[in-house]
Length: 449
Image 1 (tube, helix red, strand yellow):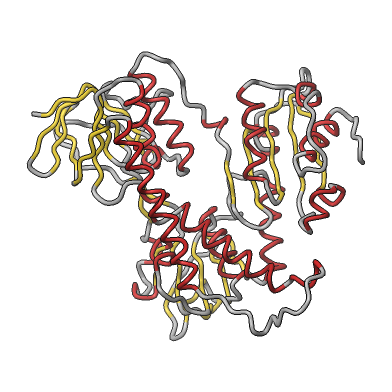
Image 2 (image 1 turned 60 degrees about the horizontal axis):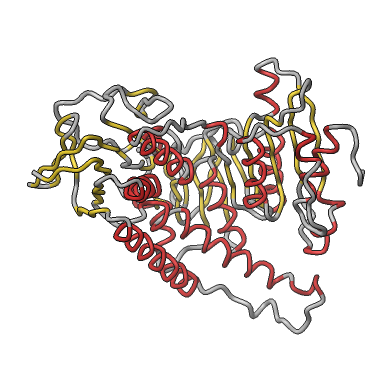
């Protein structure tokens, strides 16, 4: 029997980051993957979707180039070649997958191909081979739920990862779901000139966001020509589309971006505790069985970077380093145009918890860099505790929001205050100046308002 300090099941961002960290700490490590290194995010999710979204953004900007003084482009002759765009996406994905393979080898991680099942608190089996480990980390990811569309002709339904792998696409789409993936997919298709309708079962788009950001997305979609039905389900089939209640929606394809469910490996001789259909863990990602850890999507944290952070926390705990995982310190990004990013508590949560707070909000309409780029749509909101000014939440709508949020993440990690941020010099002209200005606004000392 092969023996290791750590065996990781699943080589997505949560799993492979865990393996690399374990190797760096000198732990004998193996990782099991049934498909491709990099998992859903790298091969079929995060990277493909963002690559195709950038192509769609460039296509849209080309159509509006005259706004920036660029003449001579016959916009009627400009077309989008989906096959070439997906070819570029495939090349980027291949390069990143090879990078993961290299990093695992570099850190002495043994890669095992196959389907793993947990056969004990310290044992797994992959096909006919058995392995033992002092610690097992389960990082087997998630899959989209289909139950709510069981009455629909399944040939009409395309999973979002299948869309990104398709050689060609149609003209009329219904995107089902109200999460970040659904919104990003709908927006990308709309930028390409497709007819897009969204059906979301919840009362708001991307419900975990601060209310102002969620409303911004809904308003943005309305202006962009995306018809959105909230608190609706797809109820029955139609000849050239489907029904959401009494409303008929014409579509060629239904893109399934419904919320995801945990993929649990086969378990033998172990009983792992669950909570709300996800694996229950403590702050160090241990399950109720101390030698078995769970990270990533199967814990309900459906972002690659959260899974990676959980993986680091788990491996550090195995190595005797206490670094608890804190979900409130995890940034959440939505890739539209402009982008949205959020970290910490929302205004609604502060009110629900009875926390007295200060609020500073700064619009990009008076930010020089945003105006110069033609992207002055958006704002930065800073929320801080009233007495000492500790920053509790930052919420951004800006062209570079998903990069700007890293500064906010650092602030929250260090328990920074409004005054701490106020002392940081932000280069001019930059969109990041809006964060500084929002901080000043929360102290009733705005410079440019």
